[in-house]
Image (cartoon, rainbow, N blue to C red; front, side, top):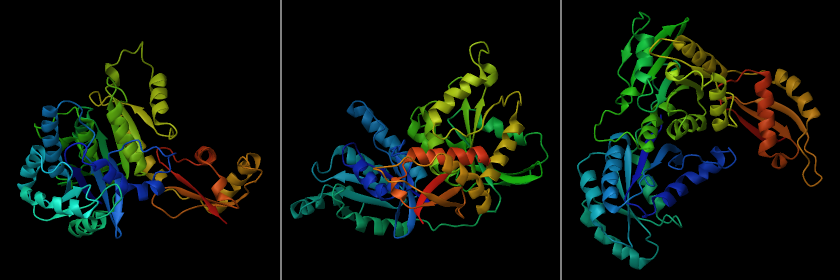
Amino acid sequence: MGAIVAIVGRPNVGKSTFFNRLIQRREAIVDAVSGVTRDRHYGKSDWNGKEFSLIDTGGYVVGSDDIFEKEIDKQVELAIDEADAIIFMVDVESGVTGMDEDVAKLLRKVDKPTFLAVNKVDNSMRMADAVEFYSLGLGEYYPLSSINGSGTGELLDALVKVLPEENEEESELPRFAVVGRPNAGKSSFINALIGEDRYIVTDIAGTTRDSIDTKYNRFGFEFNLVDTAGIRRKAKVKEDLEFYSVMRSVRAIEYCDVCIVMLDATRGFDGQVQNIFWLAQRNNKGIVILVNKWDLLEKETNSVKEYTAKIKEVISPFEDVPILFVSVLNKQRIYKAIETAVEVYKNRSKRIPTRKLNDVMLPIIERTPPPSTKGKYVKIKFCTQLPTPYPQFAFFCNLPQYVKDPYKRFLENKIRENFDFTGVPMTIFMRKK
């Protein structure tokens, strides 16, 4: 379970540039989905072999200055609640502003590790100007330039020293997390499952301060159910900011095997649900989509088929995801939901024997080879599934650099047609033989 680091500070001090610098080395590798980082505010980074999730709290607020002040306070409070460490960014060009002082006041009250990053320090004169930030009362500061990267190393060295160690304890049981925006029916879903059931074994107070793990045994299958529903108790936080529910879901998602993404049929598959979906997809988790409160929709105007098609359009190209229509209140199909999650879990750990994979895939490739580039023909000789926690396949060929995304997607679709990987993201690599 990686640590979470939040970057806070007022607008235009360079938080996003800094954020992009930290995640890009990895993004280039991790996010092969045709260059679309659908969610600019969340990424993974690592330094000296220590991996952490980075949350950029910038870019959520538009409006006048006084709105800004309130919003920034909210973001800082959220970061204080949720993150393991905080990077507070200020800008040497504008010096200490009133808003910086407000943020510093909030940060001085907490005992979380806080790093004061003074940005835009790119010459020795500015180095001297940075001294005034001592007045914020946050101790040492780290002068850096997020544009050219100077000084970021020192900050990261100090940062990874204080991050909590990864503890791989935890039972070996699969973990299913129920995620979605507030009021989608997550708690009721879990209560309906557990409620009158005597299947429940134990309640473990969750590792995430407010999420509760419930050990659950059904269909002869035992797993942990992670409830993220209790996660926004703070009256201070307005529900409307997408950022919050995503940030709150980050831990649960990173930490589970299958995400049960729950949405309210009357609200649709909106931006916030999509963010949670992409987060799960980018973390290569199994996914099941539950459309709750289906009974409340006018049946004449809404068909399951159309609704499903709409969702698939949004989540494309990863469309091979189970979408179930449930009513938690009337207990319709809620056990089906869990059964489906169990199937997805099994799909995620499925191993296709190499020989079988080649017997199926090579004839397909022969019939539809990769398109030739500049008169060069790609010959794919062999493929195998890599020994990783989720499905990744390597195809060995003479010119891996010529195989583009559309053909990789074609291969992925053919694998999906022939072997059941429903609900599970997969990665296709081209390797030199």
